Each structure stands twice: as C-alpha cells, then as structure tokens.
Image 1 (spheres, helix red, strand yellow):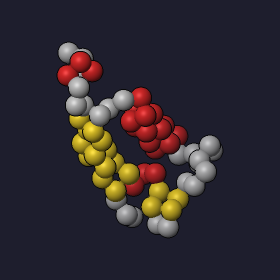
Image 2 (spheres, rainbow, N blue to C red):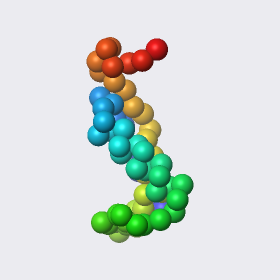
Image 3 (spheres, rainbow, N blue to C red):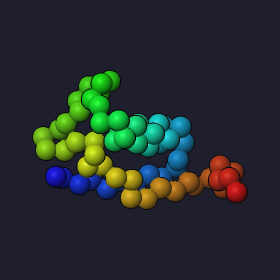
Image 4 (cartoon, one colour):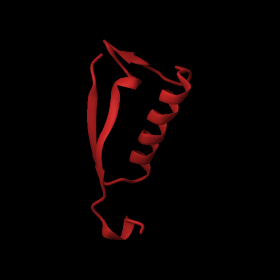
Length: 62
C-alpha cells in the first residue's frame, strides 16, 4: 500500500468535489465512473486528506 496524504488550501467547490468523490468511492468499493481506478500500486483507498484550510475569512461559517 502506498499511502498518500494531501493538504488542501482554499476549500471551494472543486476541493469539496474531490473530498466527496474520495468518500463515495471508499464507501461503495466500486470502480464505476473512474477512468483510472489504480495507478501502479496506488488506489483511491490509499488517499487521505491530511489537512484543509480556507484563506478567505468570509467563506468560513461559524
């Protein structure tokens, strides 16, 4: 297993879609809809969101 930890800065709709997509494919254990489900020895289950932050104060909800 090749674990990949990623950090996201500026959480917008694209980052949100990435997070939702990772969660969906981890929960459902399906490859339907993925163009490349595995790259060498790395699969979706090996990708983790290590940290995320927003730079604009207006976008942070209380």
